[in-house]
Image (cartoon, rainbow, N blue to C red):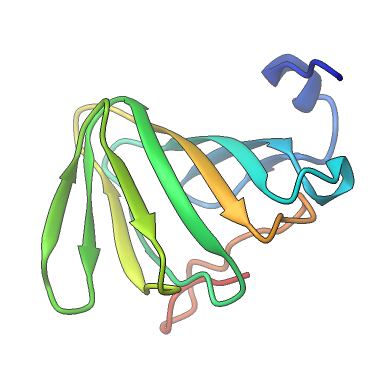
Length: 128
């Protein structure tokens, strides 16, 4: 058993500025749990085109508001208590509301190394 806090993560390379927010990589591949757990902040007013080609992701909203848009143009609001699941390596837009940050608990499978960064200038969607 172990305990790790957000403040612990801020002192190592597993605290990541990912381009439109931050990610505290609380559990990573090195922890041998079989998944990654992140506290993710999506900054107010941002939009990111994302495409996890090597990972499945589920995100549970704990604060703020935003939306996810799939490549067919369907938009899904995200509010506290909602989970969105990218179970097909779905390419998608992630947006935080203009008024407030979107705060998510993100789970990745397989686990991340922990030092991955987005390239939000990739026209096909940032991926890792």
